[in-house]
Length: 446
Image 1 (cartoon, helix red, strand yellow):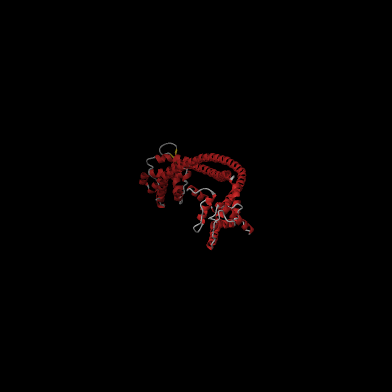
Image 2 (tube, rainbow, N blue to C red; image 1 turned 90 degrees about the vertical axis):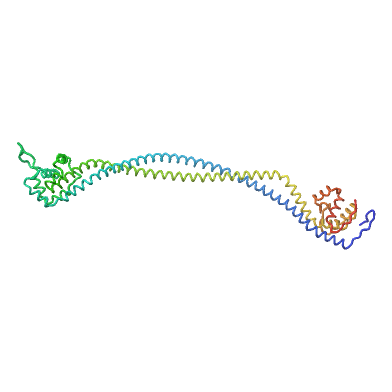
């Protein structure tokens, strides 16, 4: 290397060489990491942009595919809604009709229950009468009947009682001469003795008497006896205890018939009311079953409608989300689209810098170790020669080497200039050499 002008002596010692090696070792790893980190950022940004562009295409495709699905879902939902509304209207009409029928059935049932209660009340009145009549028959013995039968001239109470019994049992009277005047009168005593008192089954006949089918003509003939003051159990008892029981039986049958005549129409009305109520209730149950089937169908349709609404809402949410993502992706691409080319250039430049890092750091280390005391021109001349030697040895390095670009930090350089460091390249290089040197560097004032 030619001597610098003005000539000066500069001694290279082993320490200087070791400084060169140590500086290279310290800087090469850090520089490579720095370059790789910066390149990674650009590459990742480019990947994100590429992924976003790919996503935009896919989202546009998805959005295009969603539109027909949304239209189909909307049509299906509208059609299902019409069916549900129609079914609801039918169910409402049917429910109103069934409610009216139910009210009618309840009224019929109430009427039947009222008739039943009335019949039961009337029958409850008749039960003591029947029980009294049956109890009266139970007081009569065969001996009592024999005593009555032996009477040749019965008293008025006995006579009235037997006449009434004959009428009840359908025994015909015998025509006899009227003892009080001309003509003949009905006499029941002889027929009573023969056909009733003389019959060993007389008491059983009375106990088995068909009280529910007494002819009205019989009741009409017995009625005068019933009203006769002498035809009272207390009065008849004075004449015969057996006839007292028969008197009570006749009066009980008459009272029962009176009540039965009142109850029978009510029974028939009750039977008809219960039959009508049963038929109406059966019809109501059938309509209730139909109503339930319609309501179940409406519930099923509503479930299907809700499923369609959920599906439509899900599609709408998906489409809305897709549109928002697409909008944000477009905003990102619009904002960073112009940066893609610069990022690619920066990534390529950093790749070149990484490949040249070995040579550039070796040049920088030599500059720091040996050239601090030389002028800018001499430094350029030395760096040019060193660069040629590196390329000749197969070690790549930058075509235009710059210490500021290789080791400099733009932020730190800016801070130095703010603190009055001259902004020329020679002064900046000196500052970088001082910051990277492990020893006290030898410098000259430019």
